[in-house]
Length: 202
Image: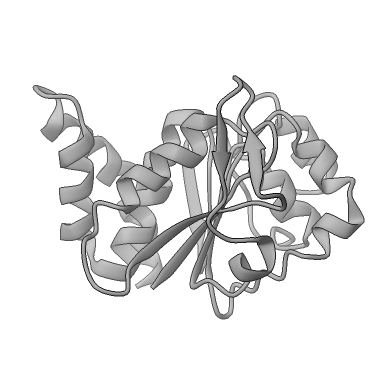
């Protein structure tokens, strides 16, 4: 099972790396989580430089694709060469987007029938793309999910694990990363945000 996290120049560390950390709580043969970028290295909005694991073509072949957020997302969607490399298909993939990543899904035409969650800065841009924006942290329909707010990246990670490995495995992953003394509260909060959509999808 290969999960790709699309991470562009100007990326938000909380979006890409929290999801990366939580998803890697699953320790089993064949489970792989990769940072996917258009260039060998990308620099975050705060100057953190990381090396990609895979390119965008390889990411388009992954079982799961999560689209991270960043301060240059509008530059990404304005680049037709870059956007043409993103061959995402909810018929064969789980697809999620964090904050401004929803704008990328909107421009790819993947949210034409699906409302989205995003951050407050990105909200008007997603609306201009013709997508309804919800005032909540997480929403999914079928194989597409979106999350709004940096720390909502944990909800996307939970959704992916729950869909692929079951709710118990997702709960264990959140329990592990949650603050001491707040673990049960964190699991309960995550469940309350994500579980209704898992039930609908089931």
